[in-house]
Image (tube, rainbow, N blue to C red; front, side):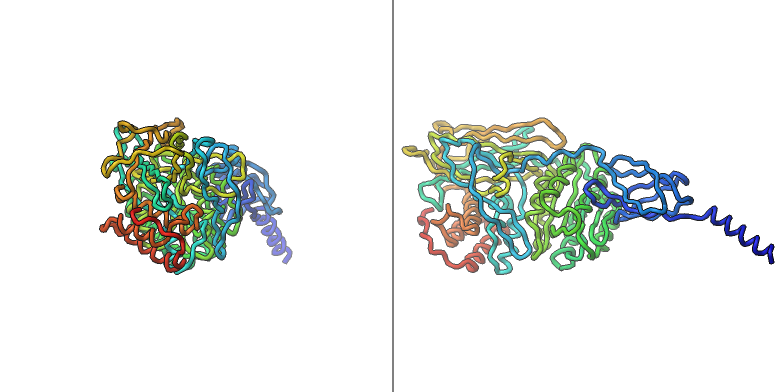
Amino acid sequence: MKSALLLLLCSVLFFTSRGQFYLRGEIKDESNGLLPDVSIRLHSSGYLYHSGSSGAFGIPVPQSSDTLTLTAEGYQTLTLPVDAAQYQTIRLHQSFHPPALPPRGLMSMTKDWRASDRKGWTVGAETYSSLVENDFIPAARFPETGFAVTIDKASYSNIRRFLNMGSTIPPDAVRIEELLNYFNFGYMDPPGDSCFTLRSELSECPWNPGDRLLFLKVCARKLDPARIPAANLVFLIDVSGSMDLPNKLPLLKSAFSLLVNNLRAIDTVTIVTYGNSVGVWMPPTSGQDKKKILQAIDDLAPGGATPGEAGIRAAFRVAKSQMIKGGNNRVILATDGDFNEGETSEEELEKLVVEYKDWGIYLTCLGVGMGNYKDSKLEALAKKGNGNFAYLDDEQEAEKVLVQEFTQTVYAVADDAYLNIVFNPALVKDYRLIGFDNKVKVLSDSLSEIQGGEVGSGHSLLALFELTPAEGESMQTVSAGGSGGGPNVERPGAEKLAQVVLNYKLPHDTMERVTDYTCTDRLIAFRDLQPCYRFASSIALFGGLLKKSRDMRQADWKDAIEMAEQSKDPADGMEQEFIGLIEKARKIYGKSKRPKVQEDR
């Protein structure tokens, strides 16, 4: 009996001496966000472990005290002693000092000019940035103005969503420059090896007799399909519980499946999701393996909270780990924007995105849904992330953005693009830029400056200025076909109306480049303008009526419809759809009692 007890005691002592302890803890960043997929090396055994999708870990260790070495992309390696009897909360520090948040980015700016503030708009739980409509500016005192060149188009499809629902539209959801961006107004190839070509037209203003409209068209070069660089794409998809609606996650699954058809063998795709957890749903995969990518997309299912901040961090880390030098490195964030875990304020999320922007990784935002849609948040992320922004209201829009306009959406030909224009006070008394309205909070910041935009392959932008001629000046009117001289060409007998300088950088290049252009005062009657410019005028008027613009009170919905009908391309389904949207807006907003514009306009 004693021998048996002695044998049992020895066995207990032996196994106790070799028993295992369980070390538990979590890993966070400097802003208290949990870090998933951190490599954890246990010194006593040399084994490698990883933190889970929630940033937590549990590791069996052979002794009560041990040493860990932690590594993560973008963070400083950390080695520290640990005690298994204590729950570990470990913080990793970034391997670089993030830049201070740059001055808030203006969409447009007139030197030394400050506008008044006003309150913003919300619709239920949807949020929109508070905008201040651009004023008329006296050219004698403030001749120089400018705006960011962007390819965002989200406002158009979002407005379409409201009108198709029979609903009025919050004025701050109307961004006229994005309505114009939605259409292609006569693309022109840049000459030679230039990145941009510019063209201008001057005509009568159809809603303010006596004023003039200056049309300024900017066309970016198209990439040669055979020379399009390899892409490193990270699909960052919101799979939280709020995405469990037909116009949210199912629409995004359809959208990304359409995009997959454009991928090549040299392209790499990673899928990162956030919801119940944050993590890599599909590891980096060649674009050639479409079946695997499509299956991973099809398997997505909604559930859980919305830790958007952690998802963004994880996606950018993955994008950096797969970085293609000289390639197209881009995170495509798809969400309703309703983050509810981690950092949720626009300001803090902007800081986060700016950190990664300097790595050369672009950010495209795809917004979906209604009710809790955060337009203001996604717009801010896209602008700070040196990327672009679209809103998907249906599968047809997804096909337009990710298939028909794939190279415009995903491949940049210029960065930090902004345009300066200096008006001639001898010809122009006052001017106002139509669209490119600024946020109230940005205007109130004395350090604000124009933040240039990303321009995609083959994009055509059209900007409109309404001008009041200087007293005693009569801009020369020419007949149909007599305007539209080529880039940088002053027509004989014409005076300089304005001088334009387009500033930009090539992707992955720090050298600033410029393209110059001269706008002349040759005036063409509105009825003789090319149809695309007259159709653009109807779009600008449509946006102004939705915003209840103080500067378009002499026109009504009937004028917008007539203008669009008389200038539409019968073969263009998008233009026909737009006319239908004006009709819907007219019924929703009721008949206008404003005085009618002259018939010949």
